[in-house]
Length: 204
Image (tube, rainbow, N blue to C red; front, top):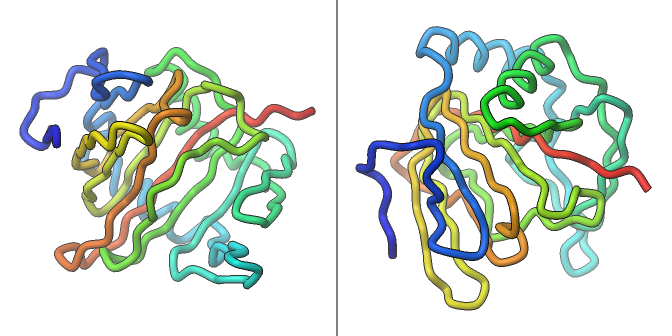
């Protein structure tokens, strides 16, 4: 397993050994600004429990989600279809920041609220048919630092990184085709994390 916890991060460095591209930019917001965004998003976003259909049964998560876009996109995953709210000025500012740093464009954002370390996400790929194939996904973290893990679908190689408060991670190219990623639960984290994943929906 490749461990990247103690590296000094270069945003041009690919954290994956092959079959995709993941760049970590480290902290792109100062501590005070990160805290302001965290508290604003916690208070102002219309958070709801996520829903998924698993083995024909509707499951609600403790983790909360929200879905925003440039238009009221419909987005389907885990057997459920969601309709996007229109971007707020704060979310547009965050989107612009990600676009400037990554030289990419995004038209939608899935937000996740993890109340503490007991809430996580199992291994998965963001390969839904609505997403731009091999498009970039920009992931912002506000609040608690959490470990983030990648696992190759075929070789089972693993890469792990700690996502810091105010940090940016970008997944692109063939990453979703060849790699799974997850947010593992932990008893060590007692505070909340808000994650914003800016992405591109392709309307057919």
